[in-house]
Length: 308
Length: 308
Image 1 (cartoon, each protein chain N blue to C red):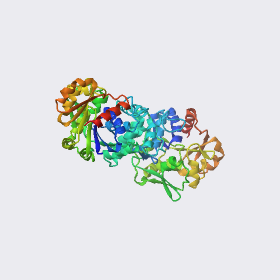
Image 2: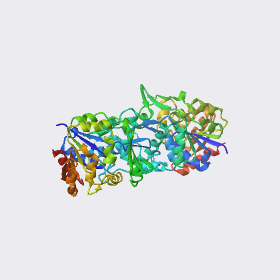
Image 3: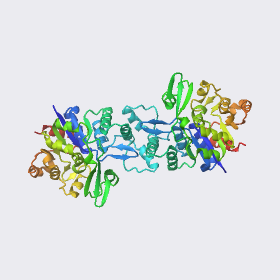
Image 4: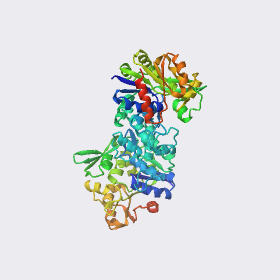
């Protein structure tokens, strides 16, 4: 069996991946994670998307929120507030250990991919989680004349700003992290997780060598719509699609990826879009894509793995 | 009124200082703190003695333990353990905020004394807490053929090793932090807190310019014995005195400081040592020195301030 590659953002991707590791041997799975929304806070390097996936695959994620660690407390954050710092980024006490150790590793000269591999190993994650790049790429959100840091837009201001443009700062100098190109080249199946196409997957695709390797790959590339019934289950994908000129629908997502996709999976609620999407040149599978529990995730993973 | 200078270690010093700030205007008080037991853990700079004093004067110390923050939790530490790191140094979640911010400030180019002043300000500490030096001094403990890091000796191994020597690594290159020499020169009264003479006060005195300024000062230097009835209330001062060849008693402490002291305060339980200590050339005051509560601390502070 070859490798399975998954391009992943945060919560939506993690939900699919928790099913996928029950369906394929985790060591064959290579998850390429978005680092465009990484942020440095209080001198600590935070990789929100990598952590969501790591915590989910380690079985310790806060299922209610989709991010952070289950049962975490926020006492350090409270004290940071008392010391005069902003506390809109909700870092839990247990979660902080990850950021402290990642920062220590990076300062000691490790790359982000090495640090990620080590953290995953310590938490018993057997799938291969690789940041898209070891070079810093920072997603910035343009809203009219204002340019916002990603987390400022996403967390601090609660995605209330209309997104009129997205910049992946540093992406032109970013090389894929070691293992990324090889994983794609050796893959028998490539999955674009149900993540925000514009904010979570586009940063990965914006790395030239990643895009090129995907385009040259003979493995089927399978997308899953993060938009169901015209709305996202989590995050602002629908709003962002609309304000960036894409139809906020499964069709709009398919159109955004275009030729890159050979297969596309949409929810039953969107089945009337099947014909339109197929006219874009991809095969469409209709199934339940809303992952409320592990069984839903396993179901969707099985569908992803059975597509031919 | 001139300034009051206090040379301070950890818990014993903090207990006196919490009384002193009720007796003298806090802004007139300059506390010179030991940094010999500073440690870098998980990439964070930790200054245990400075923090004990800061938390005590901010009214947030864990009174039961004498260190750390009252009601703190230890969830980050638990996670650090899960990530494979040693967790013998008991860092609370709230406490961690201090270390995270201190480390951030130091990495951004601030000195330890600047970072300390800023942290104190944020926590509403009005007394001036100054680390003895902005240069790193690291206390190492010799036990026979073995050389231990201070916190390894103190916390990890629980002071079980016999101390046969003490090294203040880096002290010959350490300059007093800005304000230390001036505070001593302008002081009307200098207090050597009831801290471990060998492990907490000696590192401060080992900085040449500090020792020299103290020796040249005309202000009365007042010591308080941390050993009461032949035992220390907290920490290993009695054992260390004995193994280093000093009598583990109020007399032994007085002898350790020798000519530096003009006045010495001992506990009532040790009153029979008064004559012996006075023969060392200092005036001795006998009072209750055991500080079980704030009233005890205020009492001792008043005694310290009334000595002439």
